[in-house]
Length: 456
Ligand SMILES: Cc1cc2nc3c(=O)[nH]c(=O)nc-3n(C[C@H](O)[C@H](O)[C@H](O)COP(=O)(O)OP(=O)(O)OC[C@H]3O[C@@H](n4cnc5c(N)ncnc54)[C@H](O)[C@@H]3O)c2cc1C
Image (cartoon, rainbow, N blue to C red; front, side, top):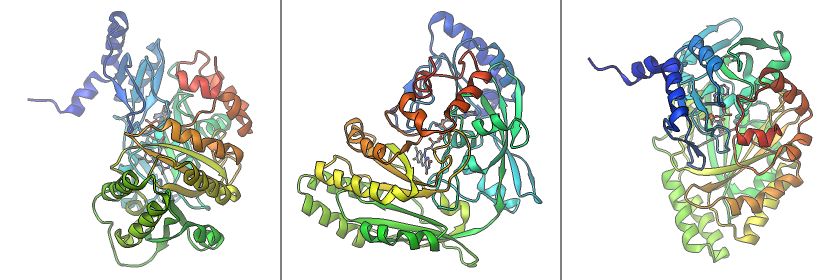
């Protein structure tokens, strides 16, 4: 009888792979290469481990001599994961552990892909209050970088966490919340995987609900002028601003009691992105024709049907076309000025990129290293097709974000190091103190984390 792939993984689990790690180190053998979603980050770790239980994980952590980097779905663009040591996945620790109809809370294994949360939550009469643009991330991975959706009255995923369990470098288990180890809790809700391995997460949910999504095309200047009303009247607003043109695709999502179901059309964004790419390649040196073509095509050749469905089916999109991304979080009130300056630079420099700029709002939160700590935020994302060089393009845009006190998204590309990041975070030193107390040997650090956190 053949064992399933999952059974096989579990049986070699952490302990089996532990011996592989030892052999690997001795012979210079590398177990299996690792690559992120966009392909820009990669490494050849000594081992890739996937423990089958918290006990196996604790044993592994106690025995590991090299660096250990937790990994989720590999959807971060920045180099949070690459290591020569062990890449550690919680792929075997997934699913709902429990839920409570009274408090509207639920507890989950931290390796759960967010795409596997909506249906069980709905069955329990619950839902996540807000979600990101995609749901391919794992719960632990999403929390580790304060992944967010849009809506000025909604915080990031880190803000939905009311408790978690952390396994530290020596295999100890710490349960934390606002009442239990509050300092660790405030650090661990957005930890970059630098404190230890999160195994369980308790979330504050709300009752299940339906969303109504509408999209339309409008000049982005008009949308910026109308922004206070749009943000007041809609729970979720975002726009995708078309590069080299004057238009944006605006989108609102609002809770509805409408009994109808109008599901999303199947398929992802391939056709839309291909259209933008074709126009870019053909007309990038003729700015007036380029702008006219984009403005015309997005209005007349692309349709944006409305959607009414369960919230989790409406929030998350399919992103089939790979890209690299830089995102900065600027104070909410600075969003329009920052966007105008970026668009002017794109036009002036004929910046070689065709993906729209994503423009969203996020409510302030309180975890020490969250990009939204202490300030309501406008999140502005700049993308580059994965086959085109992003360094030169991002280098032209990034200094604009610095002018507006931007904090880079931890999971996306940027060039800041600890010297420049520390002044942006009032609780920077508190986070470093928690990290030092939990992992004095730096078992959970890699080169990128040493650079952004300033740890020698
Ligand atoms: C197509 C696409 C769309 C995206 N859309 C959005 C969006 O709408 N909003 C947004 O904010 N971001 C977005 N992102 C970024 C993405 O949500 C974040 O980078 C997120 O952290 C990725 O989660 P992951 O599960 O892939 O984790 P990974 O990228 O694998 O890891 C991220 C971090 O989590 C840590 N980690 C993973 N598991 C654990 C664990 N068990 N314990 C401790 N630490 C752990 C890792 O060490 C690492 O530091 C998008 C990315 C892509 C590719």
